[in-house]
Image 1 (cartoon, rainbow, N blue to C red):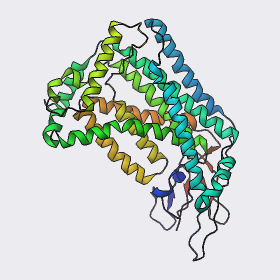
Image 2: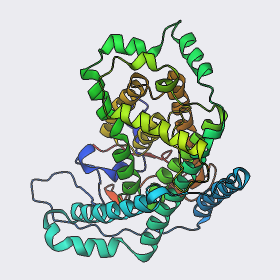
Image 3: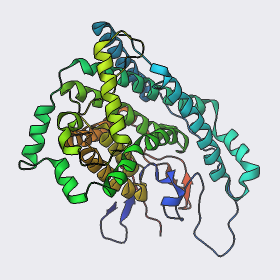
Image 4: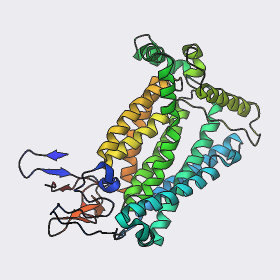
Length: 409
């Protein structure tokens, strides 16, 4: 953001500007490199130097694990109250997802190392990885992934037990009709977009969510020069799952595909309807046989976490200064809002709630890792050295991203 119109105006650089070389100016420092203005002579290859990534204290990390522990304790208390143990049916919620994350982590570490090694990546990637991935950084990255999966595991168990609460879909349906002047938003979208080609396009957008999330939170602990900056993303993701399941219990609901199925009979038969039918079968099984080892439900509508989590990704892209990713994610969030209503997964008010808790999640995540008013925090992974050239490192200031940096010419 530019401040002022004078020749001395400055541009605020956000902490993750280095996260994507392809998405920022080729004259900015990215992926650990210092890129000089062109002089006509070929620039010497520089391998990432594994910049110092140390912290004066780890109170922020303690806060993350206090949150994880508190949420786990809440889950165990709920389990005791309803008399159902926490479950990981077929290992799909915890074990398989941890294995997938470790595989993605290894792949992204190799890719990140190759990018940092530059033209001679074949011979230098291994050296870059060894110098960059110290025992400290590796421990922080892997424990961050563990924290995420523990919260996600607890979230799914609490979501499963929400089936014992009476759904209030009629109230949400009435709210939607009030907001749209007596009309159903899904029907309006069907009339506007049609019920064939748009259905398949929106289905692809909707099902892409899981892949996008699975890659993004692993990348958050791999790509940043300073892993604490990646923890802002991680903490925000912890909060969105926690706030989301809180909304499930605040207003239990199933979604318009169940409460108003007549609105969606004109859609072509797709994997969406199969998924919705399977979710209702799982719900009925848990209600009928709550002590069965495979009894596990996963259907709740308010708030939409497809929208909420996608909005967190958007806000984090903006926070890191990834301009093109921010534009792309803005379009993705908008399309996801349309898809959730069009396909019958959510009421429109569910999406509004998802956007609201996404904002709160990012605010809480930033505050947890970089508490407001604390001293000695990183304001940017870039700083200017004495010659005025970009150099890796950190600057200090009031809040993340608040320190204005001179604009490159």
